[in-house]
Length: 202
Image (tube, rainbow, N blue to C red; front, side, top):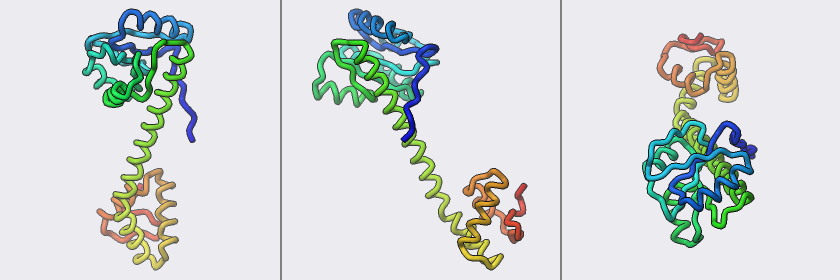
């Protein structure tokens, strides 16, 4: 399991979306003690997302759908803030893309815990997406790998294990992925030299 990557609180900032005045006052008080800089935004006002490590949106006053779409596209974790932890509010938070829920009254401890929870879950979801993409690429390249191994076995009279080791060794020497080598072998019909380097190899 990978460790949680702590955000740069010193140079980054937390975006506070559609929070009413009393909420902003309570949040700023807690965030100041934590050494976190916050920027308030309302009603989809233009805001730069650079160095924004997370955002808090108050559900009862939400009026910034465009801002939330920008946050989602940028992969910024979202915290939903509410005074009423009802099922309907939880469902609304999920629909808006929140990865954590912060309940009132606001305290320094609850702000920090919820913030780290949201960031941790966002990082875990991003890692899982990356793993799925890698798996999908491997699955899509499986037929090409089988063709490449069969070709090496036929041309050099070796078994599958030896063919795979030859292909893997070539991948390491050329610092290229197995997938790209398999594609090259599939497109290059000239015999593969005994060194295992395709005609177009470098």
